[in-house]
Image 1 (spheres, rainbow, N blue to C red):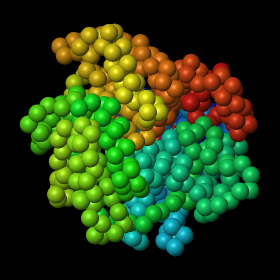
Image 2: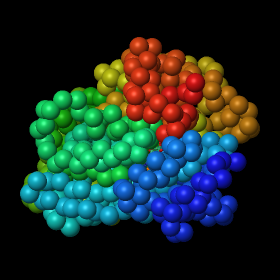
Image 3: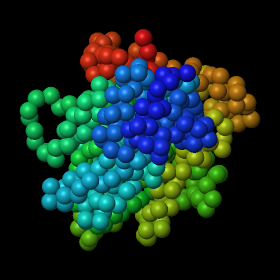
Image 4: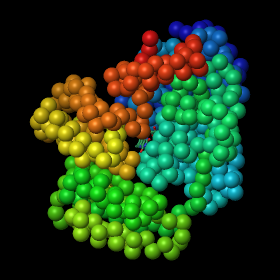
Length: 473
Ligand SMILES: Cc1cc2nc3c(=O)[nH]c(=O)nc-3n(C[C@H](O)[C@H](O)[C@H](O)COP(=O)(O)OP(=O)(O)OC[C@H]3O[C@@H](n4cnc5c(N)ncnc54)[C@H](O)[C@@H]3O)c2cc1C
């Protein structure tokens, strides 16, 4: 199917252990974590060093073979999954997991791209520091994938996305050259900031092999509350109350609609409703501080009292033990899985200016309800970033296939509404293959033309993750 010399040439670089060619061994690399995207591949190559990545890329370029970089394969838009031609090669970073250096004084950690996020968090904690990126897939996703999707998660409000957390990169370019940009500098005004081109590029401009990431002082106290809200708009008011009162100590603020919580209560063992009454929306508020005795509970109580005065909250529970904190986060983190028990979940990951969230939710819910009476809308997310996961489940009792058949039409409703509120159709998951075909309808034409120019400059042969981010042709 592909060039006959390919396996032998690659084996010469990575050895037998670095090549997977049998269908059984390749299976896990060809379907994403959710099972939503599948492809086939000529083979999977697993280089063990930057030099090996560079040699692999050079061979593939010489033989005209397209590469699909892959980390933990937990991405939600099919970016790490090859196409169905059987001619592409999956380049997995799963043998490049080393923590190369930890520098607590410079507050940096240097890691290889295949390092699992949780391992990096633990290596930082071991020297009394925090690496703040945190997301549901942290036990499996890798730094290379986090960088390539500019991952966000639950700490963005305080610490930013991967763009904000990265000081330097090492990248193998599509021609096989290595860019040694592993600088640990917080100031470096020597021209264009090239690393930002690779962050969020979803593997279309090169293979990231290592990164220098920022560390922060460890968190030593925490306070967490679960708050019942009268409306989605009240969440925006509530976050304002806490931001004014606590500044940077507000490190987590997640919201979820009643429908989201209903699914978790129905399907998560041990989950229980924390209030006697049913409320339309909920927020999970988390304060944290580097001081061990920061009296955050008092601060939380003050914020809640003000929220009650302003009618921005209807009820609240403050966690009083680590297990209660874990229970509150489990309610939030369990939404995605719980929704899977209710038939197909049509996922949308959008962002609008925070000031527009209430109007956006109202308009979008109405349009979806008009299109599919009885549709169940599972809205939740990182409201401090203006980011909502707008996931849809079929009306109770209806057929999966009928609902799935309307996926594109319903996505258009969500995305058209997002556009009308000056938002973006991908907040943190990226475009991958799922949105490469429609991004032209939602992004400025000149901006897309500039993006194509960048792609052409770095990858004129079009062999680096083709068909992802930008449509082919
Ligand atoms: C339960 C769950 C919760 C999640 N929560 C969040 C969340 O809160 N916030 C969020 O942002 N995302 C979230 N995600 C999405 C996903 O975990 C992230 O996108 C993650 O950053 C992907 O990392 P990965 O290593 O699995 O990347 P992969 O899925 O392997 O790859 C993702 C993309 O990056 C490219 N890539 C991977 N490694 C490299 C490399 N070394 N060089 C160049 N390109 C590369 C791939 O080609 C692909 O385009 C969640 C996913 C799950 C399953």
